[in-house]
Image 1 (cartoon, rainbow, N blue to C red):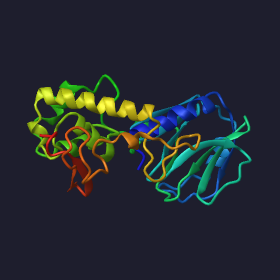
Image 2 (image 1 turned 90 degrees about the vertical axis):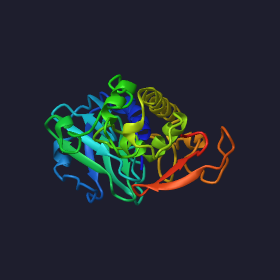
Image 3 (image 1 turned 60 degrees about the vertical axis):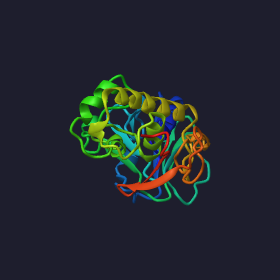
Length: 271
């Protein structure tokens, strides 16, 4: 599933193509996404100008003046900028056609994505209202992490992945950040002290920023708005490397299951 860096990469790739563009038409080839696409969008959106596009957690927010499109890539979705007459393929479900002659096309083989219209504050939408702090903002640091983990008995890895607490840190980058912070993923969150919280908060920010710079990771389906895959997976320290030697100490990387998700760690480097 695309995580925060992949969504941010998509957002940054789309923005220069969309900002200031007027919508010419909407094409819905298959409305049966996780949240069915409203047929009324074909009448609502044409003529509106796109004022900008941003991100909240793993959701993209497109400001259309009189309302907002909330977009989610689901497990396999991608948004691409293409000529509006580009031949649609099997899993191309939605086109936002621009007066520039290009379109933003949603490709979603598994149809877990979403294209939602709202004319009220999108941050108050039920999908976004309860999201936690953004990890790349100044609101998130070691002191914040320390305060919000006191008394928590759940593992530090599962705490990092709790979107009600901290948004956008999915399985891959939780593994990688914990390795860089030298913290074992199974450690109870409440037992991670202030200095280690500082180290972990910095690791989370560093990992996410490096992934964005690398264009994301390409596990299975992710590509950016130009159809190009990211390449951060070439830099993984632990994720997907069970049995392989640790890049720092040479001890084999171990695999365990936490909350039905795969966890990778070095038993020597992470304590």
